[in-house]
Structures are given as structure tokens and as C-alpha cells.
Amino acid sequence: MTGIELSKKFFFEAGLPLLKQWDTGLANRVAAGLVAGGFDSGCGSEIGGFDDEISRDHNWGPRFFLFMSERDKKEKGDELGQYLNAHLPAEFAGFVSTATTLPKNRVHIQTPRENLKAVLHLDVPPSSDVEWITIPEVWLFEYMIGPIFYEPAPLVAPLRNELAYYPDDVWFKRLSYAFFMLHLAGNVNRSVQRKDLVATQMYVNWLLQIAMRTCFLLRRRYAPYCKWLFKAFRQLPDLPDELPCLMETIAQHIDLQTVVSQLYRVTDIIGTMANDSRLIEPLPLRQKSPFVWTDFNCYGFMHAFHAKLKGSLRDTNPYENGPLDLQVIGGALNRETIRTAWETMKRG
Image (cartoon, rainbow, N blue to C red):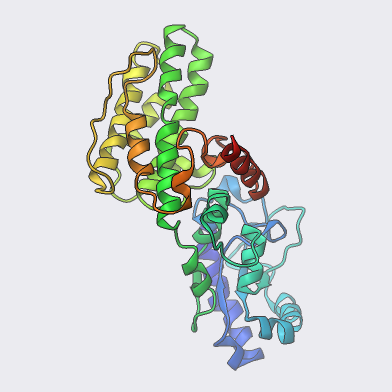
């Protein structure tokens, strides 16, 4: 049983009857789900449906989030939380909460805006392109991915709808910069010519992550952090079947004789996806380079997506002024770090 399945069953069979018994009217004004809720909530891989027996070590078990309006939480939140935690069973469907340094609360009560603050560190949804582009993408993934499985009246949905995906200019800017970052194929090429297997391995790993994140952008999906990136990548809609298989082949064994041509195939597929998207006029996949670099037309795609910008982001340098979380792969980045890097690069 996955964490989401357990949480849903726990709420409907144990939580909701208690809630209705405590206050029938309130039961029609709350929402419930299994979502990211900040560090203290202990939520992990299960919110994206990625959990397995290996990942049940961080407060995994029977629990759910209960969302209340500001007024209801202020008037009844503490009392309701005490009531539910006192009466909800510690063991359910044969499961108990697993080892963690955090409190094993069976219900986490938040308002929608408290949840926004806990996950995205925002008091209100972003109001400008710069605010949007300096939010780490993995935070947006975590905020949106957890399911709300009970919401009789709109409570969480209105706020989530505002963050469902990037505004167009932010989306095009990230696409432009992601294609620029695919120039890393050139560093693989150089490392191979030097017969430096270690450097080749590092650049291949970096390039594969950028390639996957570019595909998430082309499919208008937020990407998770590196541990679950490939698993979520394989679930993207309308993904060419060859692409994940090719990536697995490369990851299993890097052959200096074939890896460059394999990676060209990866970038060619992504370029084809961009051409097929109809977001830009189709471009040639290759552009002969006079340098020992890469012949994939990464800069052509970069400029094409940059040309789609209509607002203030159009004035940024497509080569230099890009979101930091598309440069530091797998790193722990917060919004303040990304904002500082963005402003620094913009100043030159």
C-alpha cells in the first residue's frame, strides 16, 4: 500500500467519521489530503507516489493533512487537533508511523496560506516574473504534487490553481535557459577526446539531468529533485519511448567510443520535441560548430524561446541571466540564494 492510499483510507474510514461526530457543519468546510507541509510535518516521497519499502523512514504511516479556513482554525483548530490526535488510532490497516525525529502526529492542521508559507516560503502567490523565476522548481513540484482527496467546497483549490504552472514568460525564459544548458554536450565531447572517463561521467550525469528537466518544461510539468527525477520523467505524457531507454543505457555503462553519439541522439530527440510543440518555428537539430564543442543547435533553440518573451524578462541576457536551479543540479537551493544569483547575473 502506498502512503497516499493509506492516507486516503485513514481519512475516510477513521478521520471523517470522527470529524462529523465532532461538528457536522465543519466537516463540509474543510479539505483533506497528503501534501508537503514544511519540515515539521515530516512528509517525504509518498506525497508524489514515489514511496516504497525503502522510503518508509520519515514518519511514513497513517496520517493526513486537514485544511481549515483562517476563521475556523482560529476558533476551533487547537481543540479539533487535540480531539483527533487523541481519538485517531495509532495503528491502522496494519501500519504505524515509522521512525523519525519528528512528532508522530496523525493529523496536521493548516490553513491553505500556512501551507503556502511552509512549502514555498511565500505569504501570497508570486505577483511578478522575477518572484516566479526565483522559486526553486522542486518547491513548486512539492507544493502541487500532493493529492487533495476531500474538498466538499473550494478551500485549497483556489490557491493551488494560481500556482498550477509558470506564467508564459517565465516558462519561455526557463525553456530558453534549459536549451542553453544543453551545451554541456560539448564538455562531454571534449572530455571524451581527452579520454578522461571521470570528467566524462560527471558531465554526462549533469547533461542527463538537464535533458530531463527540459522535457518537463516542454510538457508543462514541474520537475522533482534528483532522487525522483527519472521516475517522474518516465511518467511524462507523450514522451518518446526511445528516450528513457537510451538514458538508462548511457547510465549503465559509459563507453568513450559511443557516448557522444548517444548523447547527440538524446539532444536530437529533445530538439524534435521542441519543434513538435509548435511553440517555436521548427529549427534544424544540428548547427555545424567551428569549435570543438557541440553541433546540437542548443543556441538556436535558446534564442527561439527567448524571442517568445514579451515582458521584462526579454531584456535579460539569454546566455548568462538564467535561474540558478537550472545550473546547480541536485543541489539544495533556497529562494533567497536563487534571487541573489539572479540579481547578480542581471547586473553582470
